[in-house]
Image 1 (cartoon, rainbow, N blue to C red):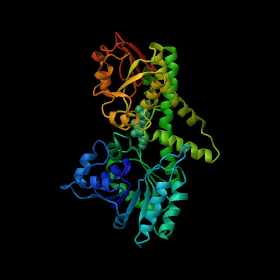
Image 2 (cartoon, helix red, strand yellow):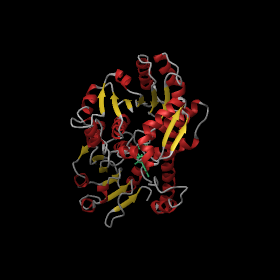
Image 3 (cartoon, rainbow, N blue to C red):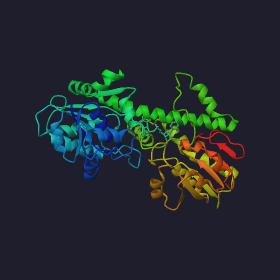
Image 4 (cartoon, protein in one colour):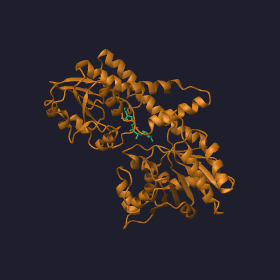
Length: 434
Ligand code: UDX
């Protein structure tokens, strides 16, 4: 099919490249000419495993030519289906900011006014329940002066992509959720995903747009709450001197619990969990319901960095101490520091008078922009030399092999916020949740 993808961010670029790889003709529309130019050289504007190969194969000079980028919205007129992949940031009160989506929907509607051909618009961005039906569709109708369901289709297809494995997650989904408020859109979405449906035998969930929107929030909120519950239980284990990881390995054998997302530690960050949990809580409150468990999940998560620093302070007077922070990205295999747990850890250490030496394999530059006054090093060993203590905040594999470097510390004391290292002879070791 001929697809257009509005937005060349983390989701838009990934799905545009993957759809081209599935055999579709794809045009990626973005307002930023710089990003458009980069994509048209066959280079991804974001860092994601597998994306360089796909961009090279389908947008590169010697590629298939199935993927191209442009700033011209009229390119949509040469396609049958359009995915809206625009940012849905957070307002100060945690509620979703739909303004970029509203502008995009209006512009897309005005573009569709120029054709009498059937066209299906699919919302890909994470939007709170009711957004497609109550906000986006009316804007498409007013912009195009057409009736949704009769003259154009509207669908909602949430993504479940993780940073660092987005391409693999797209091509090997555990489910494909197709929310549609009309049969035309439902049929078009089946066609778009047919290459995945026919090969991967992936479960297809057909529903309406409102339910599809909620499935996305429920998926993320559940995972975030699962981690916070694991941290709550891990904190109890710590009080009893019990190894939380031994407990979680056992309960993970229960299919009703599942073995993944049981890694207790300094908590969850990233661009999705914090934003999505805040947005669904605000949307629920707006309907008159206060989600108590989600509030508690955020509260536990907010306190884990303080527990980590308090543990360190149990062993060393932080005022004037040289403290090593290992790990700055919100998780391994990415340089993304959005809502990284390293940020509150660094703020707390500075409040308590510590002098910080920080290291991360890839996220030093973005963190230096946030905290320019810290010392940053090129290796973990350099960051540990002569330090009075260390905290591990991101579970990079390389942090599991630092025995020699620990011996160079003035005070060999490590608080591990991610259980990436086992207890070491000769150093004072504390696991955050043991
Ligand atoms: C998440 C969802 O997994 C994905 O489906 C959704 O589309 C976007 O949000 P992402 O934010 O990229 O993906 O990262 P994820 O791998 O889910 O980790 C989120 C946070 O939870 C990270 O800070 C990670 O360190 C933390 N985490 C994860 C834990 O603390 N313990 C765990 O067991 C797993």
